[in-house]
Length: 168
Image (cartoon, rainbow, N blue to C red; front, side, top):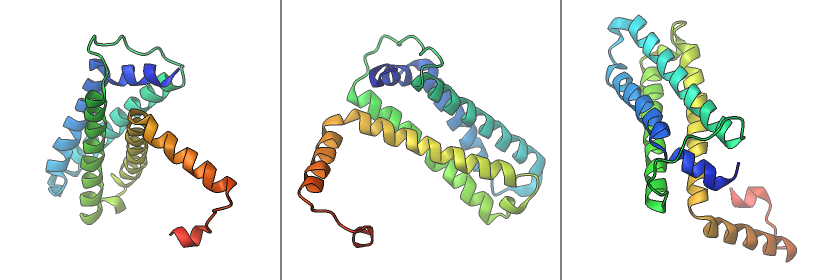
């Protein structure tokens, strides 16, 4: 599947609704994370958001890899603004989940047998979400990234290589 088809798929209302659904659940959890009074309910919410985020990412990866057909475009053309809004939504979801994880860690829930595994899994999925947002951002400005790769190739040919410890 080419990048344009993936971008079209991510701009559909079906995919956007999945992002907003996960974001809604994440926001509900974020509001309750400091209240440990009902640990079982919190653990259930964590499992639900982890499941929804996993399904969302699996769905996107299946579309990218061509294992699943992309949803029909919504009719509204995908432009840079709409793609930027999708990236912003994904980054916002990332920040909310990061807040949930950090608040849970501070509340000692990463050491609880009821929530630790799900929180760890959610943290891993969250990194994949940020990777997706970064990838979409790179697709939205191909000229910028092509120039960077061309510059790197010229520097490599000219022997202008740096040791990694000099860069860091």
